[in-house]
Each structure stands twice: as C-alpha cells, then as structure tokens.
Length: 240
Image (cartoon, rainbow, N blue to C red):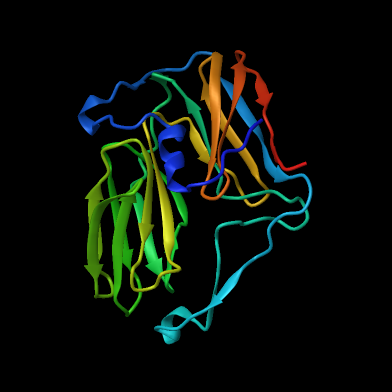
C-alpha cells in the first residue's frame, strides 16, 4: 500500500472522478441480490500524531481560549483513526442513497461535522449557530466555489454541489475552522468511526477498488473482491 501525501486538496481528483454535473447521474438505484459487506479498520501501527491546540485570538467568549486540531482524531488505545473516508469506486447500480440532507453547523467556532459525505447535485446547508460573524469560503482544489458571510445566529447558507470530489470549507474570520465535504456518485461510502472501524453493506458481488481518503494522509487504494452474502475484511494500517 502506498500513501500519497503532499498537497492536501490535490488528492481530490484521485478520490473520485471529477467533472460530472448533477444532471448526468449514471448511478441507478435497484435491488441488490446477495450483496456482500466490506469491513475493516484504519489504524496506526506505531506512533501516531499527537493532538495540537492553538490559542484563540478572536471571539473567545464564543470560541473558548484554545481550540484543538481535528486533523488527526485517534483513539489512544486502539490507535484507530476517525474521519477517514472509504469509497467503493465504480459501482453504477445498487442500494439507494440515504435521504438525509447535507447539513453542517458553525458551532462554537467549529464546523460540525468536520468531515461529511454528499451526493453530487444535492444541496449543502451550513447554519451559523454562534452569535458571531462567520463566513463560508468553499474551495474545489485551488478554485474558490463561493464565499459568503453569515453574520447572524440562525442564518443558513444553501449551495448545490454539482461535481464529485473534495470540497473544503474555511472560515476566513476564524482561520482554524475547516471542514471537508466528499461529493460522491454512489452510496457505497462511509467514514471510519472513533476506533477506526468501518463497514459498507449491500455491495453487489464483484471486484472493486476501495479508496481511502484523509485530509492529511491523502489517499490509498486497495482491490477488494466481494462475494455473495459474505463479509470481506480490508484493513488500512498506517506506518510500520
């Protein structure tokens, strides 16, 4: 397994095929016969990065005196890494997408959740839950998608995300605030949990590429063969 590091957002084009408009969905929702499950863990084999904090120099009454980086969320006992995105690529037909809307909150000067998944063509809602000025500055690679101020508590920004890939959100007022939205063309995607575990079910039998993406580590891909009604374990150890 080879990890690609370097430019964080340039991993975008490697995670999913970019450039497809919302109106050009190829994925078909259908009944899955004898689907299998892909499961596993994302974890550090040896030492893992420590937690970084920084002093707050603006809006401390709302933000607190210090903020903790969310780049590496690691369980100290299992060494499992949370917030890694796992995507089965190339599936054109299968289970339906979740009906949950894409929603992110600006809460206590953080984006919550830090990493989320959205179907291409769907709308993302970002709500300011704080009594201070935030803004939503979205990037696709190095290109700015939109940059809108949210000065009022309760204010909601809604924007459609048409292209598959990684969209990065920043707040220019509070520079530590960041979030990532992974825009996908099929529902066979998930995030690793607090112990680094993940599971993707109802996968049509076949051979696929399973891609992992992380905001710092970049991406890594493994080949997986899914057999009817069987569970297949694929782990992503880091380091070693």
